Image 1 (cartoon, rainbow, N blue to C red):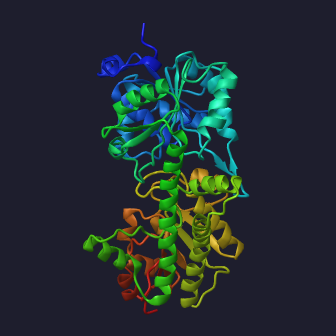
Image 2 (cartoon, rainbow, N blue to C red):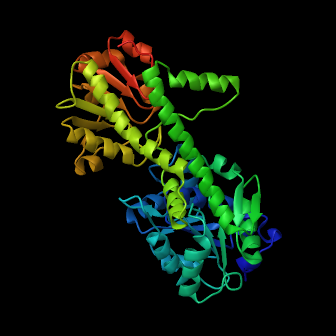
Image 3 (cartoon, rainbow, N blue to C red):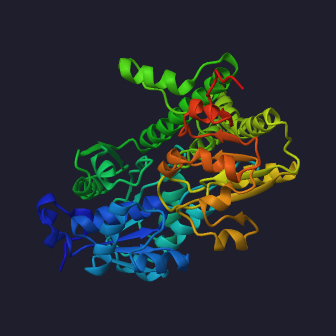
Length: 459
């Protein structure tokens, strides 16, 4: 008989064989959930991936999730084949069998930019109705300060009839995902573990220390831990907003932001983040903070301004395209525009960027004919959704007035400008939103170049 996870001691799980006695359910298998599932499985725990999306479960059961990189795919497939990782859409059964339940469900941001915790509440009700005495629940997604101790704790206690710290454990330990799905980076990231009672804190720290190479930081101040992770994300978001605003200035002032960024890195004085239309890992966190501030009647000016700047940058991208076409003697109306790269992650088969959908809609509203191309994505699903998807780079360049680099795949760095001159409707423009193409080479070929933050152009 295994020891209750709430009373676990480090020596009881100090090798993979001992850990194999314990089951971990990962609830909702997005990127965060799958990466944690791989970490737990690699450590020797028996992992159950739970998701209501049957297509995701089918992909997981084959060890072939599209948005994971090569290394992570291999680890996933290995653990599926050796039986350390199984899948199910039956959350009730999985939770009832598990010692540890990791909740990765995210809050949603609705069309009015308001935070909706209904999905998290629903997940907690399903978990609370089915977990057994002695289970440990760990929240590993960013939530607003106070959410763990109010919404999550109360929902679990009310639906289970159990009391935290006595009958079950509850801990909070999210981690900011790396831009590239690298398990090594995730494992090396020192993580905060927070719980309001000693039993939960001890158990969660012991468990998470196994999958965290650099150790854990323990605290009983759950609200401070929630705030810490939220503030970290918001600070990154603010840095992106600053980069986006400076990039717009650079375009007008004749300064190349990317060259400034390179010089700053070489001087070791500072590192500037890159301007970007999207940063999927943290785009929702500022809304969590702004809503919490509104609840306590505080106006947070800088995060609000950062949100407005980062939302405005999409409209700025449309302006860049319009300006580039104007330099070609053309207009947005009836222009043929090819959106190059729509995967969320460079050099990886991933979901379509939300920003890509928005920019397509905006351009089409203005009369443009927009097609999509991504070397890592199949076009059938996108075509069925009403998008015009090109099967090859040659097709994407044929008859085009403007190429827009939307995701910085390495393949686009080797884009043949000579072929574009032959296949496109000259004069052709390139709008580089990811900084992957050399402006001087483009202009030497007689093409028009515009880029996010790339000032100092001659045409």
